[in-house]
Image (cartoon, rainbow, N blue to C red; front, side, top):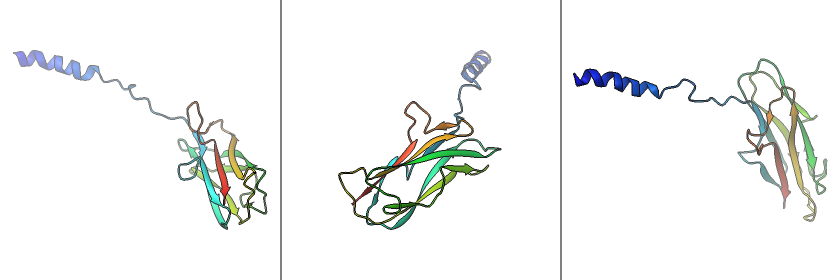
Length: 152
């Protein structure tokens, strides 16, 4: 008899905590840039090397192209053609449906640095045609830009 009374109570307790809306799925599309998980990296002033710095898309599969605009800000200690060459031309990348990362390619050239100057290059995401969040979601918008500092 006790078993018959306890069974409905047990079912009520088990299923009263279940709510199909309990877990909120994170589904906010965003675009960010990083290199091996970092937002700030260095490159040797003695290196001759071609590097790819990827801009990443985090979203559900898209049915249309995403155009991401970016700018390259060069410090006063670096000079294009002397310290580096921009291999990727223009200031936008087009993500076709199914593509989730696109590279900005830079060839670094060996050159002596002036340590009193700003020897950095910043790749900064500035916008996109679909209104996606730039940088990681949250108030800080981390990974909006990648700072590359050329060092001796």
